[in-house]
Image (cartoon, rainbow, N blue to C red; front, side, top):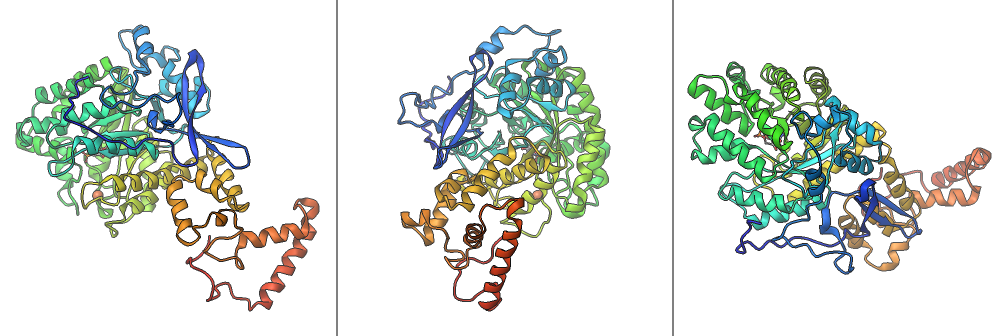
Length: 558
Ligand code: IRN
Ligand code: FE2
């Protein structure tokens, strides 16, 4: 461990309210983490868990204390050491193509509740990736692909003006606590290498980077001073450290740069603008493009996954789906094919800012042109008019684009366009994107998705407030909102809340109807009908108005 003692991160540990960490047993004695939500009915529900050992209950003997200086246990070390290369390659893609189901694939299959053969065949076909660098044995394997649960990435990392290693390690732990499936370390300031080392050694999820950022630091921030050699050495350095996937803006070609001239917002991608500046300064084709095969050879040796960057993504509603964006996407398709020839796993990045009517086209073109490589998008923001709320403008687009087949969503925080996100922003961004991802999983009919909704709906209908909190994406906030108006413990079993008060609670009225009519079912339909008529009379007698002035603290009900 290269970490020095001057850095003393303090991270959030302990179980999420209302649940505890448990493990499912997989093949070869592997233990697959879940979050087990215990309900007051005596039942429990297991949900997907990205939080690593940090959510162990420190009070139990079985939970080893997390030692940030030592890093997480090397879960995959034996799997990696034991396997032989296939035709010289050690990538999940090479094994999948050879018909081999790796331990990572078995792990992922249990995690997703699907057959290991489905995992293997989707990876072999290039429709899914398992980002897992051989030098990041601490990572708990996960899969990104349209046939699997929609994933969420959280960007962390310092900038020249703000933040420390301590803050970034806490953001990593905090983001995965709330459900980030991967994190990207986008550090650009000082200490890039050290910050990344701390993040990698303590990360239970795959870590992504954009190596051009560090390469630029090495040439003191002058894009024209970049070279293939500086970039290559940076990539090798990051591969050695254990970075699992890398954004490479190799589709920003010299001839595409003029296509951005008439745009409202030009080039908004950091990596894209760096490469465009290099191409223009030298009037040469991008070294990322001309050396792409060499790059493939490097990533192949570590099983690092490409995330082909969208350096020309639209940065405004006006620029969505324009020629610059689509020209780059065609090139990303060409590069996808080259990477796969080298047995390197690939995903493709997408926008950005896109109005709702142009979202689905993005997925369809990416699918066609990039041969169904997993699509990984940044939002998209569906309008430009709400700085301060771009986690919402973009979660709307993210839900839509995920439903259409996007495999991973890069979160956007409330600080987007305004500043570096802090810890609270990270949580807000992750929860917003978990909502988008889950809404898409439900719409796509993923077998694991609906069980949680049904459990929460039942808890809500039966006024099991503690269960409702425990099943929530964010139990702490749900509970504290309830406490604001009804803090007494007795209110946690009350058959109403302060939104509508006891008289106007629709759920309570429904219970009354059921009580009067007996169990509803085909046989009870007539009785229900009669009950409804009775309720309609009561409603009319009471004045027939839905919004009665005296009662409610809440604005409306859904
Ligand atoms: C995801 C999809 N499109 C872009 N992204 C993410 O944007 C990318 O993975 C990285 O985390 C971030 C910064 O990219 P640029 O601005 O350098 O392109
Ligand atoms: Fe933007």
